[in-house]
Image (tube, rainbow, N blue to C red; front, side, top):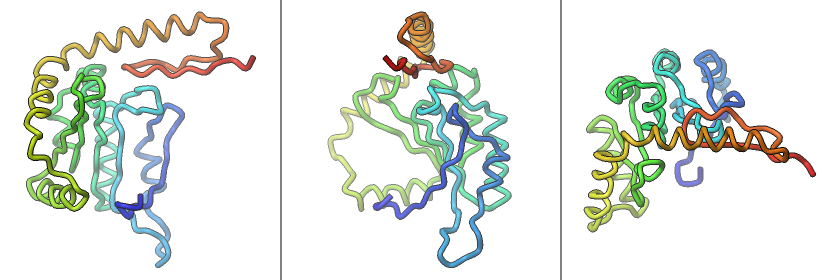
Length: 198
């Protein structure tokens, strides 16, 4: 928060997601000089703390309408977006039409050693490059990592269902153990469980 100057308001349900109604209820702060002005709604798909739960595109579009009605930017933290797309069967292009900006991680699930992509309008990306440079970013040798990212996009998206199947099997095995209190529902590649107090 120190670098961005951002103040956040967290909302959501135990599965890590929130609804358009919840967003609408908290999107505006009181009109007071000591309160931060709301500028953006951010959604994470899949939800990390929610155990890899996914939004559907209609749910995301409804939240986007709240952003649009309040003249706010709408951003998708799509670190595991391809996991969500694998689970829901939705198309990436439909997401591009719904958000002002999207980030996608190439290492989470796709097997790339490092790397993320930032998607948005030409003007947005130009500004992002300025900010990246200001924060010390900008590699001359990034081509090697870009090659790994291209390989991941070309070869590993179609294999994400294997990760989901393995995560589901792991969740089922954990649920049968007598020292496991609870296993959260597992939709994609994240398994969250609680141990019993001994």
